[in-house]
Length: 285
Ligand code: PDD
Figure 1 (cartoon, rainbow, N blue to C red):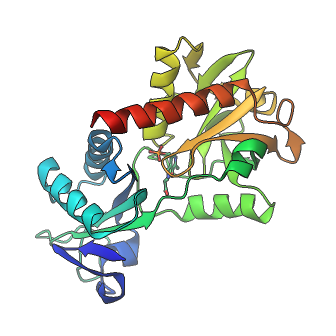
Figure 2: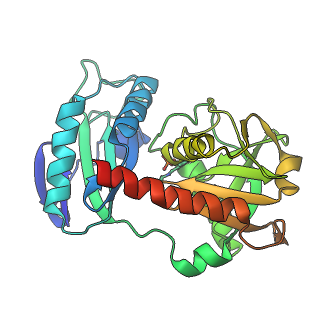
């Protein structure tokens, strides 16, 4: 596997960073996960836009212009032979003596990118759906920043895994749903798709945007608004979305069936439309 680190491409085994890197010491950095289908990047503009938002959120100057990012990404895709990949892009505030405050003057940020094979959910999971658990959203109030400091998300996701499930649905203040530990969550009730609003309490998912665009373009009833926890427990269907999982049905929540306990009509329709959309975008580019 060839990776990119600070201006150079190299085998992953040769990639080294300092133990004083602020990403290692403080989790002081941001990241992106970008899907690549048939060697073409999916929605790069949106990912670079969100990256800029994250960098602004942590007051770190973007080390590259969009055209420089595009060139690095194209080269990394070229150097990795897999057709469908996911790119992991990671920027930290760089290497400096340990001090919580930003290095002054600023140091060069660390820029790391790797490509992994993109393994979207297999047919059996698409047919059965996956289990989820719910938990209190105990993260900070800037969940719109795609921060590399993911310890809360790691602990929350592990709760799902320990229960034999795939995802943890997060409930803020015992009151409303925000998202999953590493995905966005949609609720379906009486044929309507419900999505929480993009605010500081959730990551603005690129897949989330695509799903809402598809719903709008296909006259699927949908509404973006705050979703009460009770609506999650009472849903006809629950869906999760992310760049690596695309769209997946959640068919059990806290051990109880969601709706019929099988992937529902909304999932089947959106999944098909999502695949069509993806292939159309890839053909057009
Ligand atoms: N995570 N919310 C959280 C907390 C996430 O970590 C992710 C994605 C999403 C979905 O965003 P998108 O549709 O842009 O992938 C929502 C990635 C896949 C990860 O950390 O690996």
